[in-house]
Image (cartoon, rainbow, N blue to C red; front, top):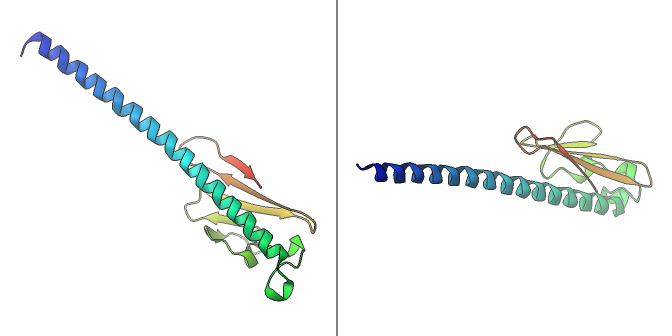
Length: 127
């Protein structure tokens, strides 16, 4: 092999290596954005379920317009399992999403703590 062919081969290996590294970084970024969107949708669906249960009469298993009677025990946790006996927290099966409810008789707060892989910080979402 000539010297020119070796140089071309080395350059091709470097370019392919850089392309692979950039593609992996791009895929990781897209995955994180996808997971954030997915968890935000879960949080919105949970808030909608809580609102529907709040408006449902007590005789049908709802809250009867009392937020303190609405929890994961009577709403259900579609994305994971209920963590405590009071029904105030639900954790996803992969452990990356924890949804907490807090409130009083006249208001309800639904918060989510999300950790999406890696060493990055967890993010907090509220609805």
